[in-house]
Length: 97
Image (cartoon, rainbow, N blue to C red; front, top):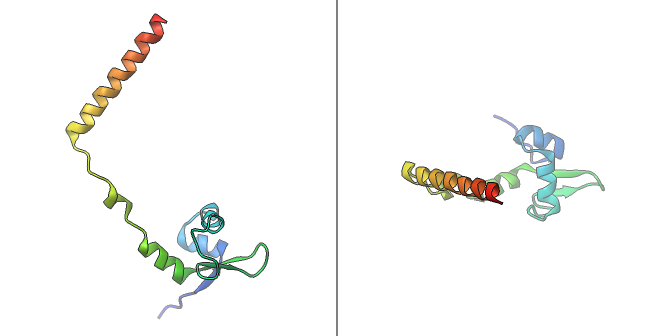
């Protein structure tokens, strides 16, 4: 049986989760994480993170890869061809100017 810590200091949370401290503090300052639910302060510079609630928040986030549309090889080739043509046009107009 393992003990699940509910509240932990930001540094410990970052060590456990792999999140950068700047990322955690950004979620706090921007209001993404609700005070007294996802985090709370016991002093002016002493935020505590509720791992149980943050894990619930993570579960509710969409899976980013699922939102991406697969790109076919032919679509990638068309984009590469268009990019190359655009670069050549830009280079030739710069030489003329």
